[in-house]
Image 1 (cartoon, chains in turn yellow, purple):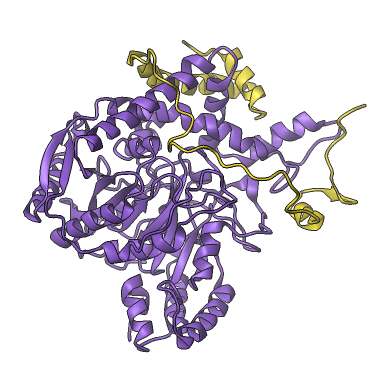
Image 2 (image 1 turned 30 degrees about the vertical axis):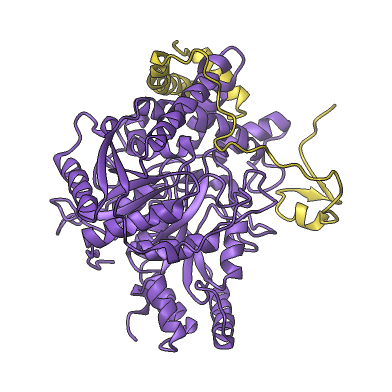
Length: 95
Length: 495
């Protein structure tokens, strides 16, 4: 499986990372190099093997569905690059 | 007492109990050593005020009696741990200015035990790297050198600042984290001890997430005894981490008897890689001889899927990272790119992440995005998770056959020079983790123990891998190896 420039551009878009057009060929090469290394996995017979979901055989614990926390608006917003009137502020999303 | 910063945790604890020194004196000695060691670039955010305040409180607590072992002992904290009111950037530009409003469970537990935080330690950006060269703070530098050659060497990564600081006696011990070898490889490169506990032993809450199914915190120390003491303070069940194990924490230090008679130590033939340097092969054989002389039985074992651990890791870890790092969007915390008129929210995301993430992090996020994307999920991600099941089964089979621990080299070479791998392709750098990454995939405890020096005078380490939840037994075997190896070398101070 070889990645071309348009696939590299698509992946960058999905990852929401801006990549300039002139950087795409090098990026595609890097992907191909890493994916070439990963291709070794195709040598393994995985027929009937379950994909691992948890490395320790434990069920994820559940807690009661109740409010245990809250009223920390100042703390939640304290590190925001742009917070106004108790909200996170972002560029216009809808016209 | 002089050179208090050179003490280990156990020695310092004992000196505090006997009233031979105070936490304030220990802390002052470390702060002085830190200020004289800017050339190592290990401490990237110093917290002397917090340190002195905690040292004074610790001295009071020790005087009152009944203080825990870690009380009054000055340690460094890897920048990956969120520390309340103190910059916690994961060595990334994207978290510039981030000061958490909360404290990670592990650093809180250390504080509750009375230990003294000296500051935050350098690391690879988001713990992605094996040489501490991807940090926004610049490289951390090893205190070790090749004889009289003044070329700067890597302390390893990603916990490079932790390893450098402990090896250079800037602190008594430090926290690290390990996703594919990030505690054990830097420990081996710097002649220090580092243990990654069983997955679930230490709470991951408040530690900046890289690959959540692999990440574990652990101590980096000057001796196996110190590792036992500090690990006990770091681990334990935490309701805030749903994968944290609800198991009692044993007294690891009390388990250090040094008696390993009758223990069965496995030597996996697949770890004898093509092109392994002779010095590494000899160190490994010597280590096996030492354990045998201490009464252990050495047996050859096979872990047949070893070869596939790194490729599986480089699917699973980037996949989880791409998901975990989606949160850095320039909205809730950290740094937002400067926008141009007319830029919408998508441009904000894309510019913020392009400016904020370094090259290696961008590459891994995008590889992870690719292997999780429609059409490739089964071929890459699910296949890697199946291989992971097989890798874990290899270990389970070895333990079921009666093996108590497994001995391997910790790294394929001694520390390399900073900049030496710049031209190499990323896969070459990934090979640093070839002996350690299997342990993360299988969720097992693994410890790196310094075992010798190479011909250039650089430290080399061996790794012991244990059964799940048996860190105490594993540390005892490591203790026997440490006693037999008698590693005492220290870097000569040039900084």
